[in-house]
Image (tube, rainbow over all chains, first blue to last red; front, side, top):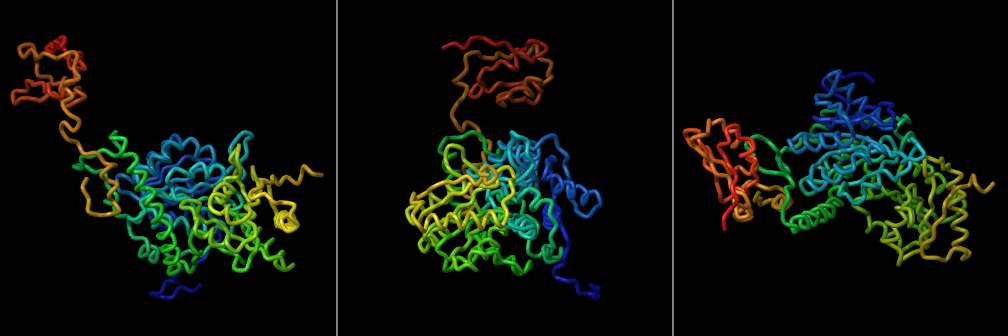
Length: 404
Length: 93
């Protein structure tokens, strides 16, 4: 591209792996404090950020710290002191961090964390499933999940804006699948720094509160039990408002990024669909290809992709459920003793309206191809059509390698 | 933390500002009572530094006064005093 005097392009393009795209977004957001501990498959995010700080491209304090528990605690402290702060982790790192995950949300501190989703041991496994991210489900974090490297970049930038909005003030997590996104390169459209600065101004350190000399108060000191319950109600109320703020920021982002995803969910060929496939994360792209193939055969199937799991898009789901014959919910996370986690979530929203088939697949990073999705959807739609599957909700573990 | 911002109402239950006697006179919980012997005191103020309840006031001449309304009688001051200028006695009825 030729540089024109006085005119800088609004966006530029780079080939980036998912982890480096997240680092790029954190740089553009001008994060002031980054505290992190390495863990595969997340390490490349904070490695890149450390490099940016070292080169002077990012004016931030980079804290190399002894554990994930301390990493999020340091971020929490930095945010309470007025900074914009970031961390990232995966799997066991998140589990080690878990106590502070709840502290951050209950203390209403705005921040962004990336979880590169990775299976939990044993056996040791560095590949993607969603059980690690979904341990955060009830904690009060806003939980998003990307389908592409571009979306991981966009959600990271949007995360700061949503989290810091005074109507929200809840921490924000961006999930992206191990390797399928974290280590896979895509062309990414990146807004330039000037435009991002206008769209995402520096954080107002006084909202919600700042710890500074001369301010005498304690955060979350012991108090009457009623205070705890009141604080939970305020979080519940903020989560309700977050739905609107997410949609607003998504629309507003189109001005600088040129993209809008449609809010809490993405609808793909759903307007006349009788069968709705529900997915989350990177494999949604493969599932969409399978939907295309089935559409070519005249089967009325569409796909609903969950971009956010908290706040949960209950209205969007119910709206689609009224026109549908069945939902095929593909889950990459299992709640032992019950169904897949998305299966549980979605059945609570729509089970009196339509039938649900919960498909457990891809645990431990098992590859699920377009052909797998095609066969799965086709077989299940046929079984529901001919009445072989009648239960309101039923579950299937997809392990084709066992059947040969 | 009183706020007029409707979105920040949660601060009232989240942030605690220091105040004296918010849950009553905690000195009533005391079993042992510290007694101060001014003539033995060398004004080192370790008792003031160590008191976990901020119940020791410092006078202008660096002697101390114990605030019995809020002293719970933990005995740290008596224990830390290098000159045994504070003695713990059983609280009388």
